Image (cartoon, rainbow, N blue to C red; front, side):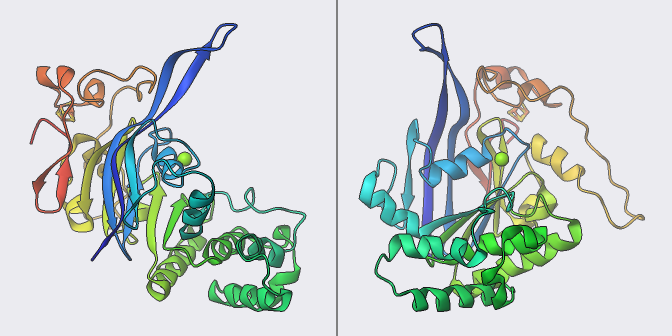
Amino acid sequence: QETILQVNGLKTYFPVKAGFFGKTVAHVKAVDGVSFAIKKGETFGLVGESGCGKSTTGRTILRFLKPYEGNILFDNKDITELKGKSLREIRKDVQMVFQDPYASLNPMQMVGDIIAEPLKNYNKNKPKTELQTEVMDLLTKVGLPTDAYYKYAHEFSGGQRQRIGIARALALKPKLIIADEPVSALDVSVQSQVLNLLKQLQAEFNLTFLFIAHDLSVVKHMSDQIGVMYLGNLVEIANKEGMYTTPLHPYTQALISAIPEPDPRKKKRRIILEGDVPSPINPPAGCPFHPRCPFAKTECKEIKPVLKEVKPLHKVACHLY
Ligand code: SF4
Ligand code: MG
């Protein structure tokens, strides 16, 4: 399989300004050197607690944010510095599905017009009837009735609104979809329906997903590879089997231990982490996880571990390996 997205040493920093002249006095190191790759047609699950930089990573790949360092290769093109017209061309191929479908849908617009908007933006001369047919087709693809075209977002349930968001993201036939916690706002019963729809659409259109989630249970059935983020860093990348059966990083082990075990006969030891996530303005020296790590040694406080492959298809950033 060919690689469609490659992110190398990506950093996204936000300046912290102070004083009358707004001088930059520090940086929020939201994403602090992240590298990973996704193959065409696969799903990469990016997991971490809120504030770990996962959404910022997604938004930087979409080039809503400017990278501070590193580069982004999409479909064999370096898109790190793209601007204007060439960025607009790339945006057709990379679409986003948001966490809160309601907030991302214009309440004053008919659903049909919401979905047609990207189509209109990129095909100025397309006849109205053709646009309508395409939108009706998209509605059917996401499992909504075609008369949804003439309704408004508030007339739909949370799950249906997310289907509308997905239809809009699909309109331009993208190659990559960045889904930022697409089911977090939905009831558990509805979550699996939306996840199934995404999987089905992936198979039908050979879509690639960057699937962002805050816990490891949601991405389990979706992902080919999973990356765990902590404080702006990717601390572990593995395929599904490796991540859930033999997590290597102490942080991942704690996250895995927090997934509820449905079988009451199986005893599971929950690892509770001490302390809070440090500030990304002044992250700890050495391993960013060392202040909370039960296995931290002297080296961990001084030398930042690099993400390296320690088993086939399994990378970890930790001095224990
Ligand atoms: Fe813990 Fe050290 Fe590994 Fe960091 S490098 S996770 S502090 S053992
Ligand atoms: Mg987020």
